[in-house]
Image (cartoon, rainbow, N blue to C red; front, side, top):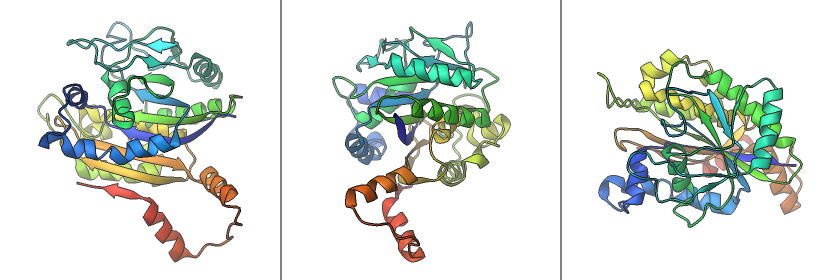
Length: 316
């Protein structure tokens, strides 16, 4: 049986992609951003997912104002890199998993989530930048990628609650897939930023940190945020964070926060990143490997100390 083992969130700032493509990671402006993902690369190299589902938004590359799907699932064998005005980014073509993607489509649509199926689709920085941040710059991406594009550009975008429930439906679909696969779900975009208008340059770190806290501990609270609240607190483009809720909905109710990183600015955007692992299955697996019986009632102090040791947070 396939299973979702973890979720990752990451900003997808296009300037980060430009810094990578032009080998500027060591410059003072960018050093902190890229150092923040060093442990993430180590983590995903150890986890070795068989497939990643990457939730992102298209930036008028595959779609335009002429056609705006709310949710578009990539079911193709591969996804070429889009030319966003200065040529395609020099990154590998994204290889898909059409068999798993088609299975997810069938399960999710029969669960009454209407998806647009894309058998041909180019992908842009919204998807490739998070892949770079997690996998570096390999000659080929280390596993197949299933893109899930979400409309957060043209009003009305889907609600956070709808996104959270879509994540639950995706989890159900993955767990009904017969192949033994480890799946990691990415939620991308955000955090607080606004790129135009009177509030251009807005960053709300207090809101961002609270969002990250609740993403781990109380995601249902985030599903109640309206579009207006998100835009007021996090800027016009902050609405992208509803995509993080698809990732969170695909995980267990209780998760372990493995790593967190946050910094500002990166091209006038707050960069947020978190790694969450499903707790129950991970604990059972660890116990099975150790061969030791589990304590029925762990001492509260020891339990809190272990939790603190596992969470590694970097805050600006």
